[in-house]
Image (tube, rainbow over all chains, first blue to last red; front, side, top):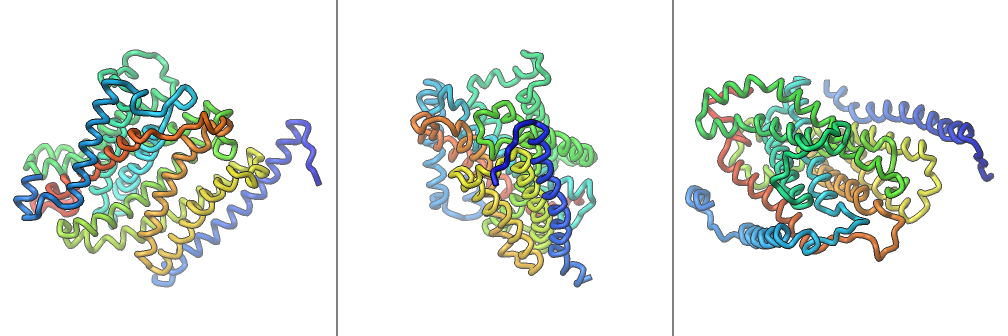
Length: 45
Length: 389
């Protein structure tokens, strides 16, 4: 469906909504990435 | 060089020396042309494209790849990671030579070398980004020279002067980090003035942040890359500590680079989202942007992580070289490929062969200076008469 954006309010709502979801995903993602990166350090200790 | 040949017994006419000699002669000829006949004789620069590869490569890439100096000295002296101490002097030397060549390259672009101090005395625009870059690069080059000087002083036997400079280590490191943070980001901020000229996928209000974060990645990767080359060509100059620590440095810096690359990937994606530029990803420029983002950011991030987990030093070293190439691609994309993207092909910039000669000439000068210094001064080994600092 074609998104219709006519006002700055709609534009901000649209872009910020996607960005906030991405940031939550990124925070979770980087946590798991850190575990992946340092998992074997912990095993050695 | 004759000293070197005499002391090492190696022939002077090696393939490397011959090729370097030809490049230096060609570079000197083009240098004379540039400063006697002018920019038009040796470049394809125009009013549309006033910045070519001397800025895009020699300056933007040069400054970013020289970031290993502040990254390594901050890790060792500010964060107390003494296990990476053997990497400090080679990183400082690389940074010092990198910034020296950046300033020399700037002369080719700007001309009139005697006007170098003008930013400090002939203008009042302290809010100018170019002024900030000029001030920071001048100050940081001085800081790098002082940070590098203990090695030269040990070589020359200047014990008292060396003792005095070593006392300043922490202060110089703090200066280095502050100045680098300022000008690495300001180089990105220079492009904020041209939102209509830079393709929307590369343009972002976060450009200063991108430049700063990617400089950390470049610095970490360059230390690994430079260490790899040093171990290949100057292993006989290294002491036991340097040989022992080489894998520690690769693993530690590889891990840091992987994590920073992950963060960089995230902020780049957020930049696309904030600009609502998703629809541009399916264009030709979008595909090239994805090559940069996935091929030179996400891929090395993953490869570094695998290399660190498996303690695969070879993979980490290849990934470092790939990441350095990625930084080059990023800076050239911003300054050349995605810049003036809307112009017809006939108006687009492609470097003149003499511009490329000067760039290769400057890189060759850097390599020759690096070789001259590491074969004489205690860069890859600790001088027996002095304690580490």
